[in-house]
Length: 268
Image (tube, rainbow, N blue to C red; front, side, top):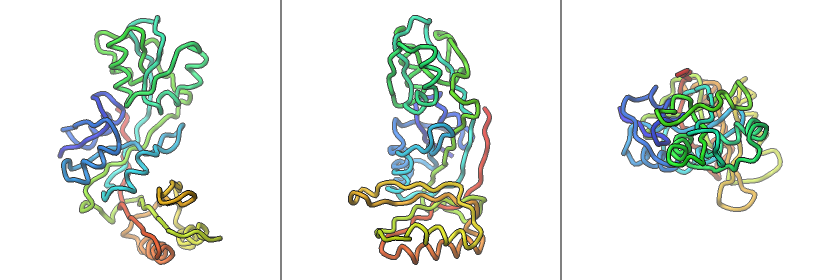
């Protein structure tokens, strides 16, 4: 099986993708990854969806809504950031925007005068550090190689830092079996009690929502779609009936069921 994820090699996405496929290729954006899977270029894609400190990755949410794909697995991995540089005389810290945010307090306390540069991935920031002695990168400590030093380890602001990755596949790979289900709902309507009606479809059946998030639909200002994660599989009768109710409530819009899947925890 081949998989595609955020590159270059050495990103946290790459570490998660190695649990999915032996052959891993790279793209510079989540949208490009999901697009490549939807087009059938790759069998699987691995994209970050949520971090325990910074919350949801909005590009991933939007790409899942825009492309016809399925979700077949969830991979959860701890995030352990290190500050990597040629020496301690750097002027700028480069990394993915999420990594910079996850280490915000540590950086302000220890390097308040350093500039911050957001790049496409943590591994890209480490590459910048290799190319330029004035730059330090934030990334996994295994990415030092022979030319960088670990100036500080475990610099994330919270030791519980972890990221959820979703494994996306062509729409035909969608499954009903699994302990969690993801769906995206676009009501194409706005009236008092609409969100309550959607929530009651799950609450009345004792179904737990582990995540609900709204995103702009892009159709007009103030118009939203909703992402739901439900702790049940589509094979369960009460979950299937809840989806039927949601589809009836949103008869002017649409419901995209990405499928049911299980969670895998990857420590290395």
